[in-house]
Image (tube, rainbow, N blue to C red; front, side, top):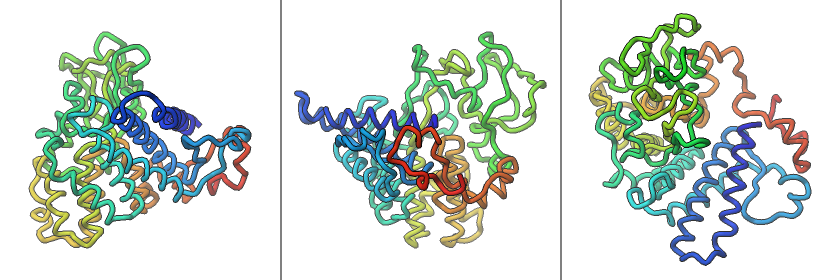
Length: 391
C-alpha cells in the first residue's frame, strides 16, 4: 500500500505539471524542459508500478470525470502502461537538455534515453533497445569513473557516471532515511550501537566476485569501523560475521547519522547503460560485438577480459548468463536485481537456488505484488477479479 500510494502521489504531481505548464507564460523552451522532466518522472513511477503490480489504473494529465466519481480508473493492460511510459520517455529524450547543461539533480537527455533502453529491454524489444542505447556509447559528457570505489563517496555525488540520482541533504525533511536499512553505519557520538541492517547480501552475491575484483571491497564488508578507523563491536546482533552492504557507508561523509543521511541514491548509472547495450547486442546474435562492452566494465573493476578467463570466445548463452551475473556484481544494492531476474525469467529459479531465506516462500504468485485491499475500497472501478493471481 505504501509503495502504491507513494508512486501514485508522484504520478498525480506529474500529471498536474503536464496539464498546466503548457498554458503558462514561460518561454516555449522552458515549458518543454519542465514537461520533459515531469514526463520522465511519470515514466519512472509507472515503470515501477507495472513491474511490481502488472497492469494498473492509468490516470494521466487528461481529466476523467467518470474516474473521479468512482475514486479512480479501472485497471489497464500492461501493454497500455508501457505505451504511456515509452511515449513519455521519447518526449523527455527529445526535450531535455544534455547532462552537463541540465541543472544538477534534474532529469537529462541521457537519463531518459537510458531508461527508455531499459524499458525496451524489459519488453524484449532488443532492436529498439540497441538503437536507443547506441548513441550513449560514444558520448564525451558521460563516462565511467576511473575508480569504482569513488562512486560511493559522498563527495563524488552527481559525478560524470551518474545519469540520475535521488537528491538528499541534511535539511530537515529532505534527508535519506534508508541509509541504515542499506548498511550506512552510524556516525560516532551521534547514536550508539548499530548493526542489524535490514538489507544484507546473500552468500551467492558476496561469493560471486573473482579474485582481484575491485568492486568487492567497495560493495560489501564483514567488519565495521567508526569515523576514526576503530573496529566497532556489535556482538549483540544476530548478523555478526555475515556480509553487509558497504556502498552506503556514511562515516566519512556529511550525513548526520544512519537515519538522517544526506547520501544520494543512484537511480541510473552509465555502467548500467553499457551493460544493457551489451545485452541487447547479444540478444540480437551479436555476441562478438557485445563482448567489448562487458570487458569495459570488467576492466574498470581491475579484471582481465572475460574471454581470457573463459578460455574461448563465449557463446550467446554463456554471455547471456555472464551478463546477468555481471549486472549483479556491478549494480548490487542499487535497486535493479529483482527487475533483472524478473525480466530474464529467472526470479523464481535463482531465488530458490541462491537465497535460502526467501526460497521457501517463493511461488509463481510472487512475480507480482498484491494490490492492497484498501485500494479496492477506495477505487470502485476495480473489480475483485482485478486482484493479482494467488492473492
